[in-house]
Length: 334
Image (tube, rainbow, N blue to C red; front, side, top):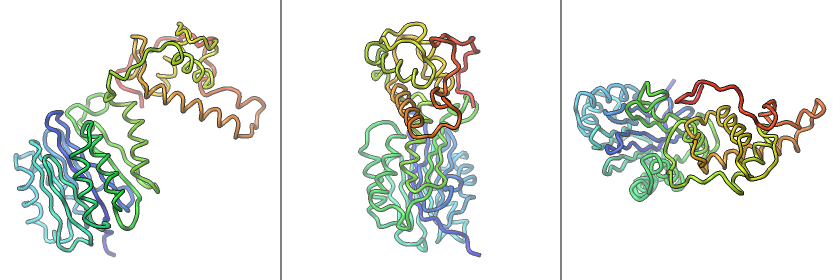
């Protein structure tokens, strides 16, 4: 039985200024994130695809760790591999150097484009415009490394992407101490294993991951919890069962206690503030959850009388009074 071929497009990139290395990938292949991306903080990032040689990941990182630059790592890996003609590889090193390789027997269309601090590569694509669009988009998009990589992935798909279709996508980014609780370098590790629109789903999942785990939102976007903002939050917290007071727009102790409980139960401790301001992303998330709760009540037939009348936060003390204090966490609970 032959080994399945990846029809895949990916980008590997480094941002030395923020000490971040990352891989973003999409494929008509199940769980592409389990095979293609490799990265290590302070070392580099690798994408191994086509008739993928998974050893390129660990062996390539070892070569990078030993001080070899990206072109030398590509040369050494492929020179030692008798199956190189069917392989594809992208590498960025610790200093942001980049290199790529596309074997002459990779299924058409296959190719790559290397730029400053990044490499885009793909096989079984609609054509060269896929990697070209990824490269140009990465170079021209604003925001941080992650914004640019996700934009590049979407640009590749708009040009046709994998000509067999879509199935899975992944984003891996590493920083020293960037993982959960600061215990490893896995700053971002988000995967969509099987979905009809994996890039859009990857963006959705990453948005939640971003709110829960990261600290990327611009502080200039913070808004005061007052007036219509406060009234809207009281309304949504009421729908969800966290708040039982009046919708006054005055952010009193009961309102703050209800919001504190909502934050804790949704693992957004890193977004809680004590200066009377709130992140717009949290306000929007709260609004979405309240709208979903309204839909649940109106579209689902109750089995137990009045079972749908109370939100998921129901059971809070009257008025949203603060529950017993818990030990403050620096990272969301699992």
